[in-house]
Length: 270
Image 1 (cartoon, rainbow, N blue to C red):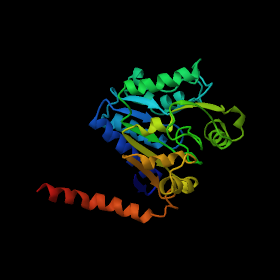
Image 2 (image 1 turned 120 degrees about the vertical axis):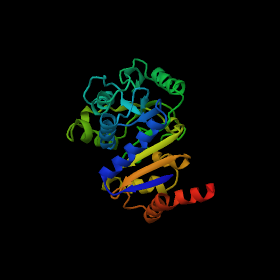
Image 3 (image 1 turned 90 degrees about the vertical axis):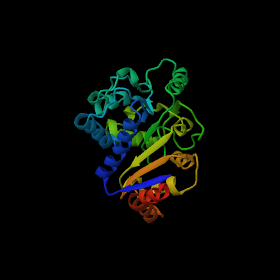
Image 4 (image 1 turned 45 degrees about the horizontal axis):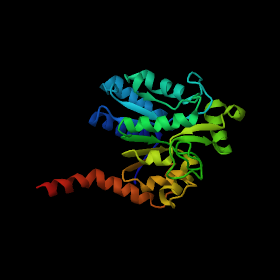
């Protein structure tokens, strides 16, 4: 796991968007796994800027979102389908037929989950999966106790997730409006992506970031499964990285990679 510590939320977004930009430039028909919530918003703003100012081309990109509330139609202003179109898709030249967001109104949710897994496989698998992390360490809606081999399925949300999402989307005093179930990619599905990119910022995430990066791999903190992935990048701001025991080592590695690694490669190539 590569840990990158940015000085603030803005630099974090620049780094994350830069990684995604490089993925699209290297492979124009990249399959991207995307996330919702407040964490990736600044990253999406920068991707829109890269599209408008630099011509970053989304025309061949295929996307699969992590999750969606069960029971919310696409046009509901709190649905993740709505969020993704409002924050990213409506502002770049992505082909609508290449967009995949779980259908919260699927009449047979279990059959839909099977179909979603098949669609990811038909697309050739996910090249780069963007992730956030919940306050209890969950990725997507894989709440504590989720199997680390789980696939796309319907998941009951914890009271803490309902509270957190009420604050983010519906309003602090409107927990009763938050759906109690969601369709979510499983941890096993996420781990099959060729590259993982998890981003987090703020003091509220410091404790859980230490747990998932430096603690044991456990189903009670599903983000800890990233420790098992051969190509996982974590980008934190200084506040989210505040409790990391090896914080200075991660910074030293960043510095060495930036300043010395290419010199070593050049010498080996001679």
